[in-house]
Image (cartoon, rainbow, N blue to C red):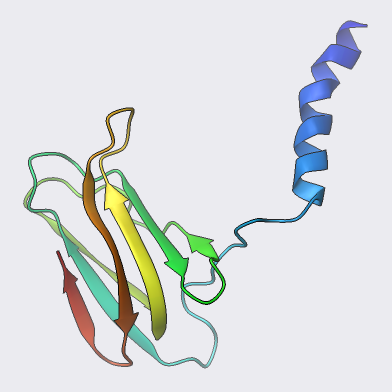
Length: 114
């Protein structure tokens, strides 16, 4: 009986993964696609602990590295050109946003946020 109870969470996880992704994984740089970059500047008093990209057309999701950006520092990310919603902020229960914006990344160009 105890082994059955231990397997239950694993079976539930497997069943959920088989139902399909509501948000598929985003490949940040697609082979052969032109790329651009965006820079997140942390001009807040908190460490950014979450950076999430959602592709506009598909809602595919990626969490690029680095995820942590200390106050006063910045991080630059390379992605395939296109439309993205970029959400970033403090990790934890009291989530504070640095960005929640939609941008179009152009080939060979950089966008700086915020």
